Length: 78
Image 1 (cartoon, one colour):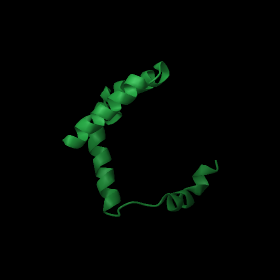
Image 2: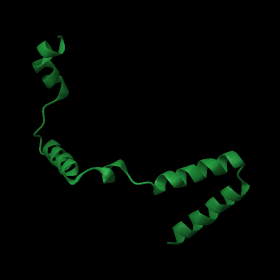
Image 3: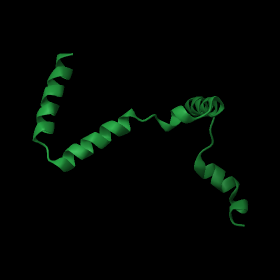
Image 4: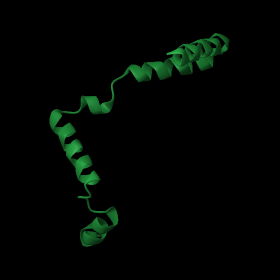
C-alpha cells in the first residue's frame, strides 16, 4: 500500500511538470485503460471455444503449423 501511495505522489509530480503533449498522452492511456477488452465483447460460445482451444494447446492436442501447411499444400497452390 505504501508503495502505491509513493508511486502516486511521484506520478503526480511528473504530471504537474509535464507539457501539454505528455499530458494528452497520459490522458489517452488512462482512457484506453477504461475501455473494455475485446474479449469481453465476445459471445459466450466464442469465449468457450477459445478456452477449449487453450486447454487443447496446454494438453498437447494441437498440430504444428508446419505440419498443417505440408499436409494441405496441394490445396494451397490452387
